[in-house]
Image: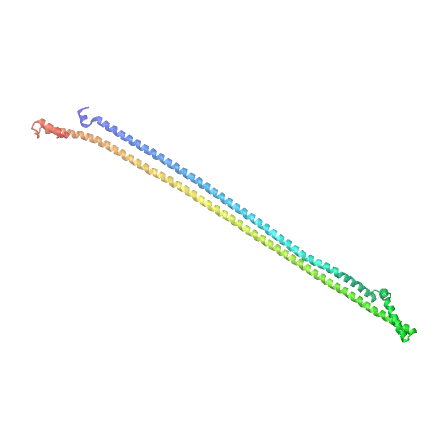
Length: 385
């Protein structure tokens, strides 16, 4: 190494400075590369975690709301089935109740009709013999009065008055009694015979009138019985007509009430099913809206999180790049300053040597010889007292 190289630092010192500068620059490059890689890896990991988390959340949201829809559908289907089953059971109960009522009404009115018919049968059994007897007596009276011809009239008197064995004993007794009176009175002959004939004729007339009165009475009884039976038949017919009319009215009202009850039940069932369908739609709509909001929030949250990660990464990368630029510039400045300082130190050394030479010829404090001055100058140069 020449004296000047040793004096100004020389090429070796410059090489050392250059090597140190390259090492510092390489260290900065390695550091920023590591920081860039770490930021990139961290950002990639964060984005992956965000996407994974939000994908899982989206899957959970979708699955949860799908399960909620299924639960709503199942619940409302069960409710619809219960409503339909309840309405069916209620219709069956109404039908059964009204059928029972119809049977009871029909049976009771049938019993009432049967009672009337039975009563009329008993009445006919009691009244018909009187009616028939009355018909017979009226026929006999018609014969007696000649309504059925002279032959019938003669036959009536022959069979019932003149030749009636029931009157023979009474006629004989009356004849004997009259004969005794006539004998006691001394009436005999034709006069006695005429009196006998007159008394016999009177007895026949009286007997006939009595018999006709009896026939008339019996006929009247038969007529009365017939009239009474006819009234009873009329009354029974009226009662039966009334029963049947009331039965028809009752059954008509019953069926009207049945129809009203079933119609009301059907309307109630339709209302319940409509409410069920409306509630199902509302519930599903709410679930869908909640699901859409949840998915929208998930997407917004993902975007926000990703933007925050990317923004943070960009900011950190900008800081790293800024620090790298600052450090690189500082390194270059330090390198330049070191070169400049090395050259400045050589120049200062030259100036100090020149001053030393000048001072060598100047008397010093330790003597006036040049060596004394040189020693003082050297000590001063190297900082020794």
